[in-house]
Length: 203
Figure 1 (tube, rainbow, N blue to C red):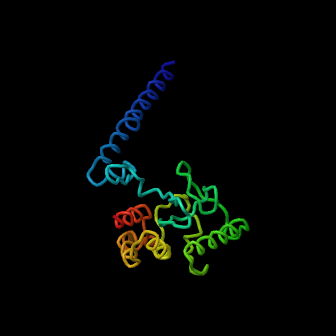
Figure 2: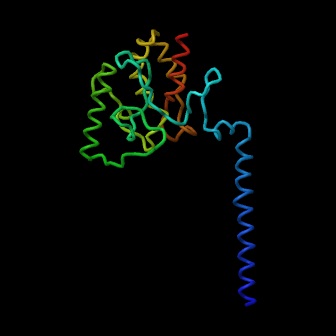
Figure 3: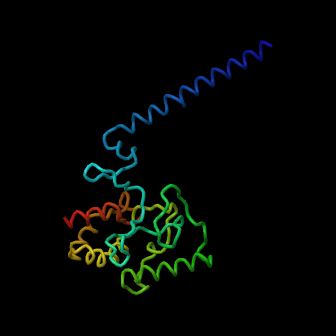
């Protein structure tokens, strides 16, 4: 009986210690670190605000929808596997890939259809459409596109927004981020901040 009592008390002490350590001190430590200058914005979701109004997050890519598809003023994100149609906006409440392989017939057909739609929208040959314009990211909510895809859209965006194409291309360069640590990943262009810059240039 004494052994059982000792084991029970030891278990309770471990439970109490781990509850305090992992249930109180650790979350409190994470919260304190998240309040440090330079980290708070990331901890709060990297929310982008314009004129005091939240307009999105630079970590979550949601494809903008033009009121008139024939006069589309927006740069567009990569397609999403969670979208209801091939190039439609993603459902930001969910995230995920299609998990289909490169030789899946349905995926190949979807990519072909996307390439045709993008080529028609940008008035370019299908061969000029870059891979990220027709393939979804693993999350389906990638906020960045390749500089090549951004440049492909520059002519349309400039024309519809009444801007010089050279000015729009300059904005693309301005919003292109390099490789992490100089070697990791590929350069990317944040679509939300680029679209905001284009709209600001119209004023």
